[in-house]
Length: 391
Ligand SMILES: Cc1ncc(COP(=O)(O)O)c(C=O)c1O
Image (cartoon, rainbow, N blue to C red):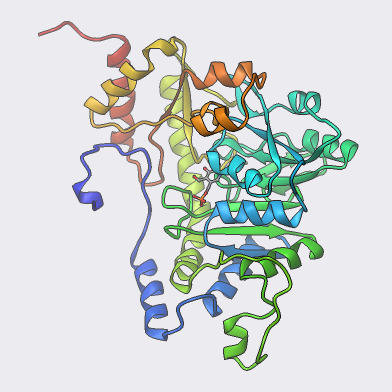
């Protein structure tokens, strides 16, 4: 369905694409070299500069990035990995791919939907090998605390940065880019993300040893790429690890180069919209708005609100849908999905996650959202709680 055919007056998310993206993809098609070549190399270079990190590998999607990260840090059967339950299922799935077990950590509270370091510390066992953190909605999580915990128990840190390209964490040591603080950072360029290539992702690390493992495993465990051989740099290859085909193609890399140029502006525009939402909703007695203010360090990927009366969530979402406004839930917590109930049954001791998840609603947010669209959302929310007299 094209955007023009969408029946939403205000969709949940929207992409910003222009003629530069069309030209970039057309140029690749004309070049005749379609997978992992010069555009992918350029995209990786640009991403490294953007984050100020030593290594970046473009991959098929963020799930592949997370899987490579888990393998690179050496996760295996019997290991445990701390991770939030309030995340997209891919975070936990990537841990399962290695045979390791996700151990779900609660969030801080209605004011902060990021992982609680206190709960993480309480769930460390002698099998814990790593902690996978999420920057929920693009709000950096408390990495100073996570690093202290990781140092104490010798844990690897994997950052799921699917929401956070350009997020800045203000650590004790000064500002640092999300994705560069832990051992490995993983980004998503899925169609609803702050920058998109349709499908796509990036793995970044400052560690040379981890980088080599990721590089090799991204393309079948092979020592050279088709592009290297095309350039005459080598004639054959060895296979030195059980690898995957997690490569990105050149069309997507070309899209990514253009989208990366737009992301800072898009993030700034998202912030303006969030400021306006917050101003308009601050006096609502029916809503709580997580996270303090609209910090510049966030990428504002999502605008979550918590209904004070969660029992009215379905009605609330239906009423907004009736006004042409698309909303969503971020997230149904991972431990409650059928597959996870079967695989990891039991009480995961996640009281805060369970409570906030039952009343969370995500409102529309994207850089091209107009103030008229925002006003329509705000007015429709007001009408739901205080309906006018029936005609
Ligand atoms: C928090 C989080 N992690 C991982 C992913 C997986 O990203 P991808 O769709 O690029 O595999 C997503 C995508 O929606 C996400 O939101």
